Amino acid sequence: MTPSIPALTAHGARFPVIGFGTSQLGNCGEIVASALKLGYRLIDTAWKYGTEEGVGKGIKASRVPRQDIFLVTKVSHEYLKADAFADSVEESLERLQTDYVDLLFVHWPAIDGTPLAETMAALAKAKRAGKARHIGVANFNIALLEDARRLCPEPLSVLQAEYHPYLDQSKVLAHCRKVGLAFMAYCPLGRGRLFKDPVIAEIARARGKTVAQVALRWLVQQGNIAPIPRSSNPQHMAESLKVFDFSLTDDEMKRIHGLARPDGRIANPAGRAPKWD
Ligand SMILES: NC(=O)c1ccc[n+]([C@@H]2O[C@H](COP(=O)([O-])OP(=O)(O)OC[C@H]3O[C@@H](n4cnc5c(N)ncnc54)[C@H](OP(=O)(O)O)[C@@H]3O)[C@@H](O)[C@H]2O)c1
Image (cartoon, rainbow, N blue to C red):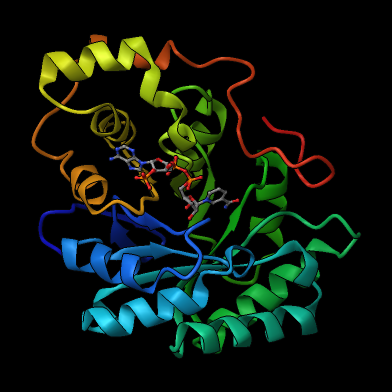
């Protein structure tokens, strides 16, 4: 692990507090190799993003040893039945050119009636077979998360969900802390929506930092949260790692918390999203 990025731990999983997202990056081999060279050690991908092959190539090209990388992928909602799940994991590993991932997520809850118990058994089986060192769920609400924890024969370590200053996630965050799950924050920069925010811009100016750095600092400073910003720009990638040399005051933290708004959620696919907390 790169010494400059602090680690987060949960149920035996230990990973860098800032990771690198790859959705929408397409054939991302070179980008992933650059991210690894800059010091990122957590790479987030998914079958659904179509970036697993690029991530596999990027890891190889970077020459960073596989064991130094915390590799995350996800099984999509179309493959939550036992056999399809196992096949999806095998195919992901093949594309990633590796024997295991460090963290395997169920990407979204089932919408076709697949019993959660079946999916949780398949997830635990992947872990017991050594194909995933740690397991978790993404985009589950608290009730679904609790069902998943009860039904899964292996402990879940991480919940991945959307979080940035425009979205209030206080209920889910409090729940994760209570039950000892780490929270991995996707869309941490609000997919770019934060960049024109006058409050964050003012704080950034006063601190001699950028809006992205202030937004990421706000997330990591809360504790138990690991944001995974995505970028195709090496300057931005480097900048997003430099959030450990300053801290925000309580007042600045509060002002940013105050930016949450009812329509702040970005990833809300109709027919697939659960009833959010
Ligand atoms: N589990 C899920 O359902 C789910 C859903 C959505 C996302 N995710 C994961 O979370 C990752 C991050 O979310 P996201 O990709 O939606 O959005 P994001 O990271 O919030 O925002 C990405 C945008 O921010 C810009 N950016 C990044 N760093 C910057 C910097 N330092 N300064 C200025 N601009 C910067 C990027 O542009 P440039 O390329 O120009 O830097 C890009 O347009 C995804 O890639 C994916 O891995 C998971």
